[in-house]
Image (tube, rainbow, N blue to C red):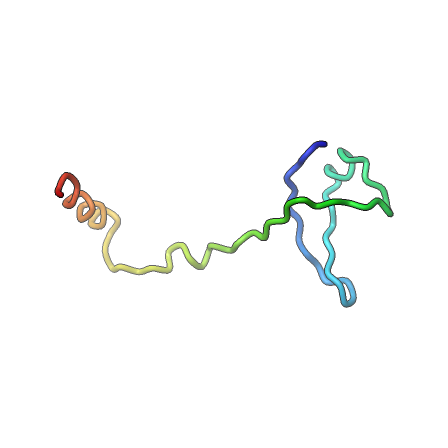
Amino acid sequence: MLFMEAETVVRKWGNSLGIVLPRELVAMQNIKEGDVLSLPIVIKKADLSKVFGSIKTGMSGQKFKDMAREGWGKD
């Protein structure tokens, strides 16, 4: 069995949700309409763009590194 990582977007179709399979995956697996697929691993990608940079300390990166180094080597 071959595995290929593919990224796709979930879309609303009527009252259901669906995904579109990338052409490369369809060709590699010889997928045809009506085939039954097993999706062993589905991982929802997290949007971390709002997390990174959201903690504001008011100090520069260099100042933060200097503070961290002060504690190195101390018990």
